[in-house]
Amino acid sequence: MKFSMLSVAAAVVAVATAAPLTKRAADNNNVVGYWVPWGDVPVSALDMSKYTHINYGFGVLWKGAASPATITFDRYYDGDNMQALVTRGNAAGVPILMSIGGWTGSQTFSTVAASASLRKTFIDNALVFVRKNTAGDDAENPNGWNMDGIDIDWEYPGREGAVCNTYSPQDSANYLQLLKELRAQLDLEFPTKRKLITAAVRVQPFDDASGKPMSNVAAYVPYFDWISIMAYDIMGSWSATTGGNAPFNTPPSPGDPFSF
Image (cartoon, rainbow, N blue to C red):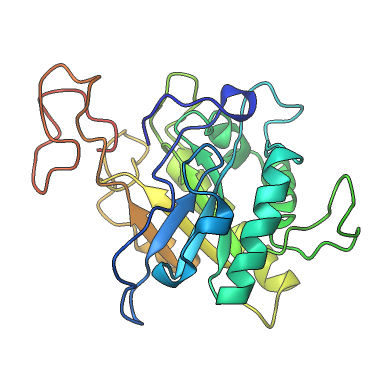
């Protein structure tokens, strides 16, 4: 998701806000909106009937945090919006998920996924978003946000994406392990109500250890409730040649594609 927008610690990248749609999808489809605090539509103005799910963007991983596994967001500014969105979502029957990562918010995903101890810390930090708050509505540091799941926007496993992001040939294998552990902990803490795991992914499959797109991603299927393919930012103002931002059919070259 390549845009130059500043937010918490200058580490967030913007996606489309939850803008109006003309029709809600059929029951077997999902219409997912991303709500971001710098957008033009306040939480109070959202038409919740247009969406099946809404992701709050973003909690970010950045190198300046106390730990690579720290999920950074503004508890005061974001917190009010998060609470308002969850309240509206609950009233409308629209699940709310926390999206973690983004174009420049994926700086330490690789580091976290490679370490058993950091994975554990990250998962505990992520689960704060889906736990119920028992510290009171006016608590300075709520211990839960009562969301319905976690959306992972790692850009990208096995490749750099933004120049600030760490990456490794082992990212995709480590990502799978992170997903296994996240799913296990969610199911352990919430045995009667499934908490969702979703992801924003690039057009091609995750890279394998050789740096090539994987030929088989079946191992990931049990851990995602669904994925959203970022079929945009294929070409843009940053590209060496002119091309469509979200073309129906195009090769990954010429130019400088970001979601391929």
